[in-house]
Amino acid sequence: MRARLAAPLVQDGDVNRDAAREAVVEAGWQAVRDDGRVRVELSEAAYAEPRLRQLFPWTGMGELHFSRCTERRWTWDIPYIQPAAGGAYWVSGPLRSQTVGPAATAQEAIAMVVERLPAGCGPAFLGTPEELAAHEATTKRPPD
Image (cartoon, rainbow, N blue to C red; front, side, top):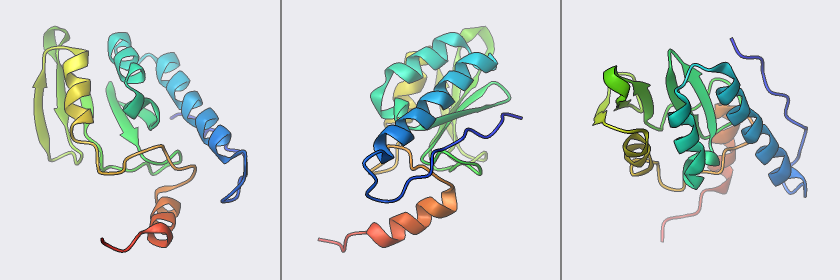
């Protein structure tokens, strides 16, 4: 089990909020690289994609997941990538019961995830899914 990444205390409007979030997300990417459960080519390809690099990464069973928040219980609204035989990949999700399909390369798997990102996804929210939901509830704009 990965240790919780310390997040500096910040308030809405704090000038350091973006820097704090970026530091926590970057630490998450470093933890993914360090733990070795995800193929190097996959973690590098995901990190190279700006829309994924701004999300919080986490791993499980060799899978690479992406969260819209930085604290556990991470969000489960983004597809994730699993290793497959012969160096290929399988994209699933966002729920465990949902399948996107096979990908021959890491870049193809990344593209499949990116095209299925939720609207307005990213950057990651500094906090828990519950805090993210509360924040989104207070900042929703009325429909046009």
